[in-house]
Length: 297
Image (cartoon, rainbow, N blue to C red; front, side, top):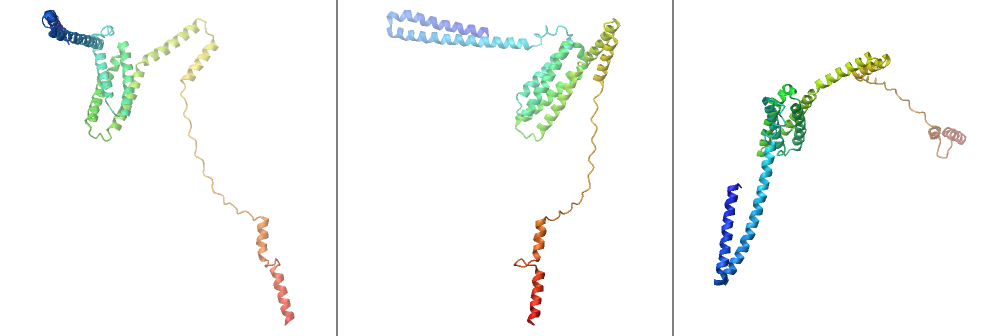
């Protein structure tokens, strides 16, 4: 709602109120019924006007906040933050942020949880890279592949996947492929972010070594302390040995197990099997029977 529309509405409301007021004065004595009607009509009109004014103020404030937000997000508003960049560098950062913002907006529309989670991690790392190269413009040249290829390609891939997913057609194994692709992108961006600080790590090592030598030269560090520092440095730089593979155990030949000797009670039980029902040895019983048979004959 612009100022012309607001002004036109205010003029119409003022005319209606003026007509009602004039009608009240004219009909006060001449037409009591018309006076009563106009009085209530004026009250209703005033209430409606008050509501319209409140609505207009609300819409105007909301539009103002939106304009301020767009102004903050526009490239011209960030010119002060990128005053240390030349026009080409500022355009690279602006384009990178535009691609990253689009990927984030697309991520919010994707239904697959794994893809959304992977995109969240990828965009966080990409944001750290953009912040770093904006603060250190000398790193923009070494990050050209990131800004000119990685981010635009990521934006294109996610745009197409979001379109396919929203269409409702079958995606088959596409979510698994996208998740694997984003895992590779995450590894690449992590490496890219780490590489931005390689010079710092190298310079830090050189500065420490140069200062240590200067301290020794000035006599503030004796030979023993210097040797300890060198030994600690060598120990820190020594590669961690990989664990040696353990030989597989040699299989032992199986030893045949001997059957255990029967217990004494077992022997007694086995020997007891040659007894008769009365517990007498069978041999004696047979011999007695033969002898009795001979006597009978």
